[in-house]
Image 1 (cartoon, rainbow, N blue to C red):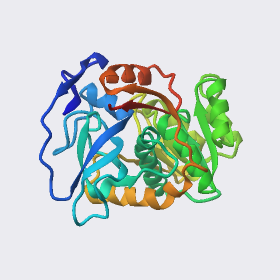
Image 2: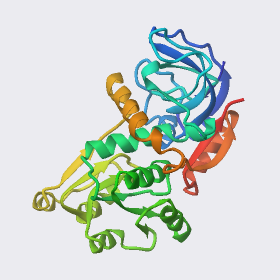
Image 3: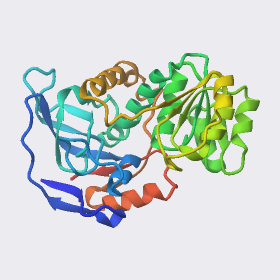
Length: 320
């Protein structure tokens, strides 16, 4: 089969389409013929050598994909020919992938494979982290990076949960689009003092932060008493200073999570939760936002596009 592998850790040019043997599968694995694969920030980190694949996973990137089942375990509810999408530990940049059947989801009615492939990772990330923070209806959620793949999903899922949503994005056009997705307040982080603006809005009960160290102090200021900061990315640094006095005075919590490194049982539980809560929202209350599609052989260009900062929603690779 064809797979887009990392020849040497480095820039987008290090991604190359090559012929690879298809690995034998485990008893509980299903085999999917991939038609579309989402591109995520984690793929860029893996390409750079900063986020290696977990043991047993394919060495090439790709954390979500959609396509058609070629085989399925007899003990599973799936059958060859089913249209599915999947949360993957890796290996989505290829023509085929073997995945534990517990990580499969049906392609929602009315969605293309491209749209389905753009939604799995983001939906699992949002649901797992809102649950981790104990987010409740009526609370205020601050979503950083509201124009990204996780951000666009978080705005819509949180609104469906009955939360008030504040988001940050870069520039008036992007903030306007976030408002169209349902954000109650959309702040331009390039022009606004977003932390003060959030405080003027009464503060945030929960913050989903993809930025990392650069926002640590401002995030703490933006939290309400009893607030929870969930750090899910490190786009602007992995180390920062935290004012413990403010943390104690606000009785706040800082939570760090990952998705890919969780044990299979935990990832399967998250996928099941997404099927129960999120899939019924699609497409009426949750719309996948696909910025661009590129063929698998142009994975390097897809990474360049994502790194440009101009993407609104997701970039998806298509597999012939």
